[in-house]
Length: 282
Ligand code: AMP
Ligand code: FE
Ligand code: FE
Ligand code: ZN
Image (cartoon, rainbow, N blue to C red):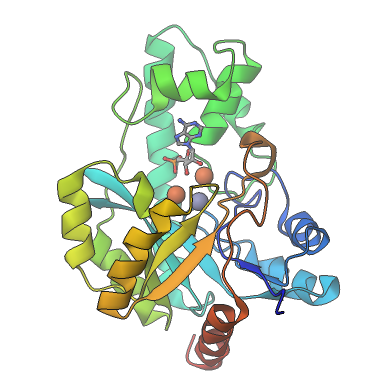
């Protein structure tokens, strides 16, 4: 029996996870995983230390990212895998997201202030101690909690900063086609993230008509029955079947690392592609 498991979806402190890249890799190893991809929101900062740490930890790794995009006014997450993370096309997209986030965070804090909840730039910075992190709503939610404006993170999203709630700001939109073509420019694969979470039927329909390289069929602790639907689509389109936990550490305590994973065969396809991508122009 092959016990090789690869978890291809997780977040570090470079975005909204609570483990540093190094801690994340150690935690993955201790949890029995053989391989991972760290897929931070809109940043590849984790890879500055992740490759070296993976080698030291004895775990295999391929590059990954979860990019925020927009389709017909709805927010859609796209996973990129096995790209050259040093490629200027990826680096430029990440810095565009960074600027987008800085502007958007400012606007959200302003709205919260208008609703009597004062969160300063410094309060927000205190929730992202790594400095270079991809800061966003999860950090704002933690700041709201720290200041006692909400009783828990869920309440922050439910009442104030969740999509279309009173203090929500979508921010500059970065479209889906640009995102997919950027991943491919960096020699990587573009994968639809957690299709299970897309509630708008029309958006899902248009999304599935587009050209991708893969789809995330195994996700978090979603029940097995859900997988068949995405598998069928993957088979029909000849897309790669990916999967992972979407582990965030203590901010999502009910989702353990490795609760969804892919077999060795899938990981080897990505690994071969990743080695090729890193050897090509950056
Ligand atoms: P952002 O990228 O700044 O828009 O933040 C989106 C992230 O916030 C998602 O990837 C989740 O990790 C987190 N998030 C979204 N909705 C919720 C929620 N209802 N409760 C807790 N976390 C959430
Ligand atoms: Fe997240
Ligand atoms: Fe996501
Ligand atoms: Zn994620």
